[in-house]
Image (tube, rainbow, N blue to C red; front, top):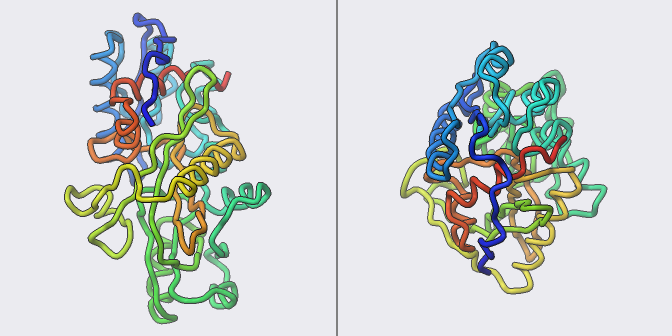
Length: 319
C-alpha cells in the first residue's frame, strides 16, 4: 500500500539547532554511529542547515546546553539511548526529542517487561521464562522444551543471543549470555517466518509500514545476518496471505499502543503454525543502509529522507 507522502509536512523550523545524538558506550555503538551519519545527511538534504552530529559522552548535558540545541534526533541504540536514560535527561533539560518517552523506552528495552505488558492485551507470545544471574536456570526452565533461545533481556542487534539444543549447550551459552546482561530471557525456539513491521506516527496518524520477511543464510537472524551484506534475503512485502498481513499490522499497532510508544518503533514477529507471535519492540530502529525500517518504509513509497522527516516531526510528542 502506497503512503500519501503529501501528508508529510515540515513541523520543525528549518533554522532550528538540531543535534543528531549517536554513538555512546553501548555495545551497539558502531551501528548507532552509522545510523547517525545517515540521518544527518538526510537532514542536510531536507534543508536543516543547523543540524549536527554529537557522539554521546558523560558531558552530554553540558554540550547540549552550550550548543543551545533546540531539538534532538535520537539515533542511539542500546543502553543509555534506548532505555529511558537519555529520554529522562532530555525531559529535565526540556529539549524536545524524537521517538518514545521515558516509560515506553525503559519497558521495551527489557524483553521480559515488554512481554509482561503485552500479555495483558492478549497479544500472542512464545512461552518463556526470565532467569536471573543468581538463579538456578535448570529449575526455571524445566517446563520449557528444547531447543531454546537465550536472549539477554536488555540487548539489541542479537548480541549475546544463542540457540541451544540440549542441557550441555545451555550451560555453556548461558554463561556467555550473562556477559551481556545479568538477566536472560529463555524462550522456546519455534520454526516459522521471521517478520518485522515498523509503526510510525505522522501528525497524530498511526500506521504500520509494509511487513518485511527475512530469510537468513545463518540459522537464525543473528548479528552477522543483520549487518553483513548478502547474508539475509529480504522479501518485501512479506509472503503472507492478505488476512495474515492485516493481522500482523493490527497487532503491531496494538503492541505499540499497549507499551505507550510514540513517534516510531519496530515490532518483530515470528509466525508459526499460523500464529503471529510478537518477539519484541525496538523503540530506536536502525537507520543504516542495511536497516529494516528504511527498507519497509521505502516499500510503501516513503523514501529515506521522508522517513527521517516523519521521525523528526515526532519531536515534542513526549512533552
